[in-house]
Length: 306
Ligand SMILES: O=C(O)C(=O)C[C@]1(C(=O)O)C=C[C@@H](O)C=C1
Image (cartoon, rainbow, N blue to C red; front, side, top):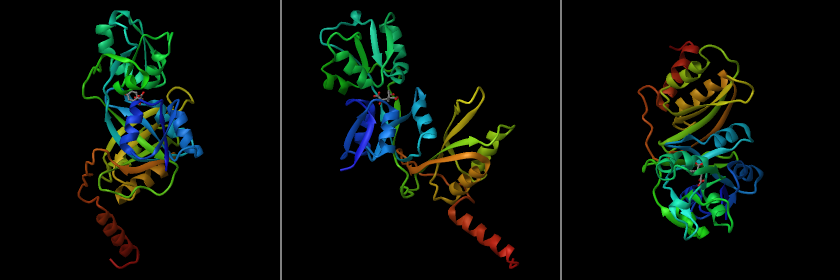
């Protein structure tokens, strides 16, 4: 049976995402995103499931940086998970007694309104995950009074939900990805996404525009772009791109090759089916057949036949 690492412990949103992506695998809980990805890199697991972005909080930057800088991993699938937060306490704790709350920073951001309204004097401490926070609260003598976690974590760690659905928005969604060591790519489905990380060769006016032009002229639609600091000084960035289509599609393959020529380093992070199954809209003149026809035409010109 194959094994997938994930951000643990038992009861995280990440575990719920893993169950949706791969219901019948062994699960390996890890202390943080980096450890889950390393388990996949080192072969301790066949792959990993980690959060990538949230509809309110935005990118999960640790995941972006790990995928860009660590040993190469490929995304093979994704899932969109609605996230709903509960305020979990040891049985008997009342709202007025809550002074110290622990949760994952992304969960804190999404519940800020509730905390300011209902628990204005409470401090919020960062935990490694929402379920790790619940586990901390369950320890006898814990310095924390409450955890912001998925309701299921309350069941695992013997805590009561003193409030439910406390997120500032009820429609929040987190996008999780499944990754594995590089291997054969998932087949194109017509509703695919491709992810890339681009490092500039040198900084100059229009460098980002040049990269974006590679997509624009071939009718490739971007679904996400993110700049991240390289760490080499202020003003030095690299870029994450998500785009519609599969690298096997001619327009995507040509755009990726174009970007490779432009960039100091281009890391391919995978082509995989979109969770929402939205089919790629192909602009006239950018279908595979159009690229084939153009290549044949060029061949004839070069051979002096047209
Ligand atoms: O702590 C968890 O339960 C996670 O799965 C991590 C995570 C995140 O990194 O954004 C996932 C979804 C929520 O937005 C809060 C935390």
